[in-house]
Image (tube, rainbow, N blue to C red; front, side, top):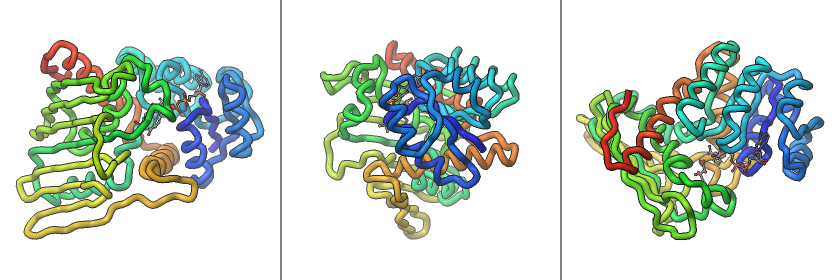
Length: 336
Ligand code: NAD
Ligand code: 89V
């Protein structure tokens, strides 16, 4: 399968490493209007052809997949360009700036008969996946309460400066992952309320968000996110879990310890491996990049819809929009 990368920035480097680890896949071209980034990425990964413009690349290259690793404002035009060119697309989160844009992107790819997946990778982290698998196998019986928690004081702004200046911060950038994990664990959401705060005066958006979710399955969950939490150990970028079921409890604790209590205690180390190209503390996220891209390729080969397809991700994005609306006016939002 021939892949082209669109956007040669901070996170795309992980995506390039991951493509190079997947059998039967070759990245044949990269694209970025920023010449320095484009050339550095092409050189680093030995890619012969590079382009400043995505339309030019799509016209010139014979591709199976485009990997869209740009920030959100360009996602809709780039996915629509992929649809016009008749290539499958994997697009970074946040999927779109508005629900209308996201729906248009899903429709464009559907009409083109091509597969669209969102690079929604947190539910693919191996520690989170171990918890999802345990829950789905009935390890604690029927769940009725969950807390999905990401609290950190890590400096994300040095690698991703736009996070400090965007009007929306933690729900759109990080909460979107944590809400998606809540969906993967407990299913779709019927009601949501949220409150937010900005603790760091040097940034524009909110850096704390606390959300209360009712799930159609009967579970009530709390999704809490903070980049204003100074504590030891610093757990970036771990998502911690506490889940109560009618037969026991499950916890994913700091340090990647999965603990299931049910007639006794089963504690497991579910730490992610340190891939050869990865570095701590990002190795958890980096491993999930390889897993999600492998999932995309497997789905294309087997004709299956990816778990985090564009269509699926509309429901995660709707939670982000609902959380901002609730935080703005104090309402409790009924999800369609
Ligand atoms: P970045 O700003 O470092 O890189 C984006 C690159 O895209 C830039 O080099 C820019 O010149 C290029 N670009 C913009 N418009 C383009 C266009 N039309 N055609 C080609 N190139 C274009 O951003 P980043 O930090 O790498 O983030 C990219 C995306 O990845 C964001 O949506 C972010 O939320 C997401 N991200 C995801 C994770 C994760 O774990 N899933 C982690 C970090 C970032
Ligand atoms: O996942 C992300 O999109 C990143 C981070 C983990 C730092 O929030 O921006």
